[in-house]
Image (cartoon, rainbow, N blue to C red; front, side):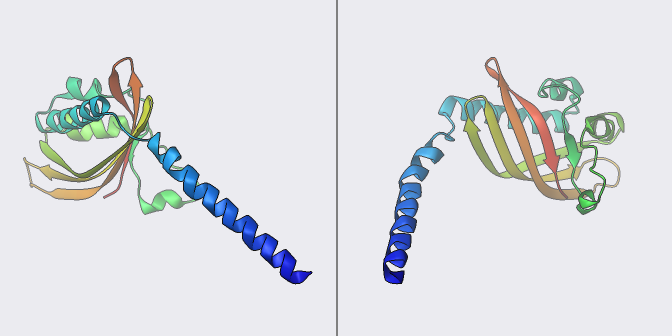
Length: 161
């Protein structure tokens, strides 16, 4: 009886694996970005870096769903017992647009995934201070985007250094 149980188990696992293999391409197909949406998302990313470089606070604010979105640097200390407050757009705004310092930001290795009105962009970035002591920092950023009407808006921005 044991060999029969083993054969049935192996057959069941094989069927499940075959089903997942057949189903997987159909599932991943729904996360493909249309060329129109890809262009719109790429335009949003270009506006993001342009607004930071040109010190265009109003233009940057227009990219956001609202000013209370999660917008923060996530540090290793965020894994503490107390969850961090990720709604720190005001800190970013103060540093980038109100501090008197000027920055240039560039995005690399941009990856876009989309399903309907929801998109995720992950990318590497380089931020260079172009006034003052001219420091640079690099990291990884994840943006969640929501399509509102025919425009994409940033619903969250989390990043590391």
